Amino acid sequence: MVLGEKSLWEWHRPWTTPMRPRCAVFDFDGTLSLIRGGWTEIMVTMMADHLLTLPGTKETAETLHETVRHYVLGLNGKPTIYQMQRFAAEITARGGEAEHPQHYHEEYLRRLGIRIDERKARIRAGEATPDDLLVPGAREFLMTLAKAGVELTLASGTEQVFIEEESRVLGIDAFFEGRIYGPGTDPMAFTKLQVMQDLLSRHGIDAAALIGVGDGVVETQNMSGLGGLTIGVASDEQLRAGACEPWKRERLIESGAHLIIPDYQHAAELAERLVGRG
Image 1 (tube, rainbow, N blue to C red):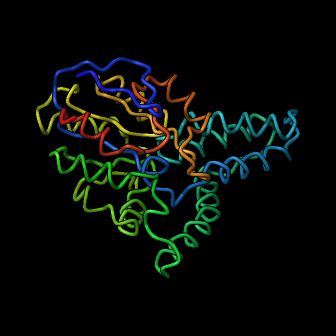
Image 2 (image 1 turned 135 degrees about the horizontal axis):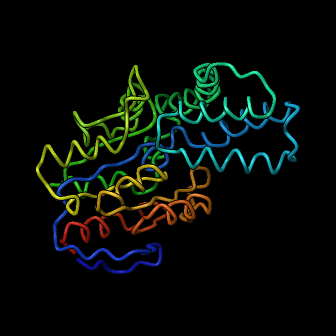
């Protein structure tokens, strides 16, 4: 199918399969949820501030922040422990004595948790609505796909227990009932690629009938490699202003996304065209 054009839709690779999509795999943070919005800056600041104190660090603070941001975003989509492993390796390479990666993971979660708890409390107190902490149009997009019979799956590098709880707070858990996946007690055992492959095997379908939606490198590369349609969501998690975040956009294009969108404006029209109802 050849899809129509919208000014906010950037097609970087053609998608012409006649197959109707059967399943869609969504990332969570930044793709649907903004509860953890700003996580990148929290992680990058934590890492860069520590690296700046080491004898082997010669970069300026500005350059170091960009270096750290590059590898943090390059690992986005994998379990968070991978980013912490890279951080520990950077500490050692710069003459420092690194703690176990889990130590840094816990410190990151502590810092991020303060922001998450504040946002969830605002929803529970009625000071914000769940949609205030969703990528604009996300609920409508999920609803339209689900009504069209597309099975929706959630796969995130964030720990499964957190995704399940946060998806309930946002009121989108019902779209993914029984199909929410993330790292468990052994985070290294989890991969989004395995979730996608299991989905194809379970349904006995070709990857051309699969849609992948995410804002990270890993899920985009995985879906592209399998042969499914890849939608890169270059969401601006802070402003929610309908424009692509440049860093995300560049990385998603490099990772093989067919389509780049800033959010789900015109969600119903996009979903209907994807399922051949436009």
